[in-house]
Amino acid sequence: MLKDKTIVLGITGSIAAYKMANVASLLKKLHCDVHVIMTENSTNFINPITFETLTNNKCLIDTFDRNFQYNVEHVSLAKKADLMLIAPASANIIAKLANGLADDMLTTTALACTCKKIIAPAMNTNMFQNEIVQSNIKRLENYGFIIIPPVTGMLACGDIGTGKMQSEDVIIDYILSEIAYEKDMQGLKVLITAGPTQEAIDPVRFITNHSSGKMGYALAKIAMLRGADVTLVSGKTCLKAPARVKVVDVISAEDMYNAVIERLDEQDIVIKAAAVADYCPVSVSTEKIKKSDSDANIKLKRTPDILKKIGEIRRDNQYICGFSMETQNLIENSRTKLFKKKIDMIVANSLKEPGAGFNTDTNVVTIITEDKEIPLQLMSKDIVAEQILTAILVERELKNRKILI
Ligand code: PMT
Image (cartoon, helix red, strand yellow):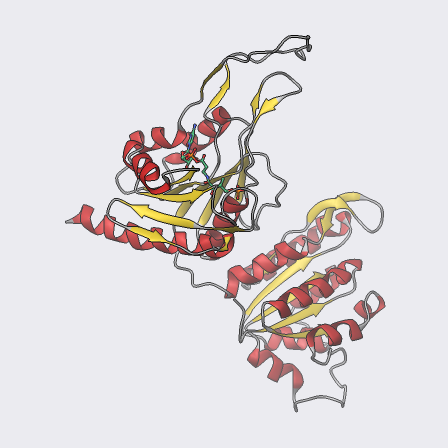
């Protein structure tokens, strides 16, 4: 994804500097050339040798270091950079950059860089909320810097508040979203559902299924990386939401129905990867149902069929893609769902296929439309997501042309 890309990592004095070793390592695994520039202060938190070992490049600290590879190192590095990330970014570096100061290797390189620049602030809450810091951040945003907002949590000083640098995977998502993908979904609003629903029996028990949410989250991440404005309606999962995606948490099929229908009108594309319970208990006991020595019966009723409802009330120019999970007659049964639910595409996966379906990192799917069947081999859910989104863009374009004729 980042093959042949050069990334400059700027590291400043904050305890979060330790996380950057992981970021550097993840970037190397994505095949990019990583160059690290550290401020003098940051070397108190992590040793430059860590980065030199991870990146195979000399870690730059002092502008006047004579042991350099090029004549004017900060300019040559700035010229070849595809992206510069300054993380953790202290209040000090933010102030310097906002005012165009250039008194060390990091600030001179940042000024010389014409590529995209991302900043991930990390500091104590009061410092972060200080008006001066906030106005410097605004200033950087106005100059085109992309800001990764810090999160709320336990800070190094022991306070709980906003100022904690985002996690390594969120930082990587930001980098990927800026330079790894063509922005062929820019301007499109996409709603994706993911995960299982839980149908309560009583305050203790519920009916659910094995969906982990991995397929839906992969779709949300890749759509976001391709520039779409993504809303992810998610049942309960253990997954971390991708960066830059709006997440709506739901529990039951009815919650998911309400969340999707409420947002349907504004969407260009809807993808329903969630495993929605088809039945829920007719009544939910408010107290824990006591066990007895005899068998128990739970009377079930149908949940609302969200996809079918979407098919009934959708606009013509909205593209609707469902998923279909089967254990037999995969293609035939999935095709029946495509027509019954009046949708444009259905992605069929079989629980009988090794590596496919629930809770795996891979899937084996067939993309089905009215006149096409595209079988895909076993591949990671990220790559499946890429293929599905590409197929949706192609088919949507064909459909929109037909509408115009
Ligand atoms: O989450 P993972 O562990 O990664 O697993 C991925 C997955 C197996 C859940 C995913 O690939 C998948 O197949 N999702 C759909 C599962 C399913 O519910 O299939 P279905 O054939 O029962 O439903 C057909 C379609 O109708 C689905 O798009 C479903 O979201 C939708 N539906 C079903 C019932 C209901 N009441 N409302 C719905 O909208």
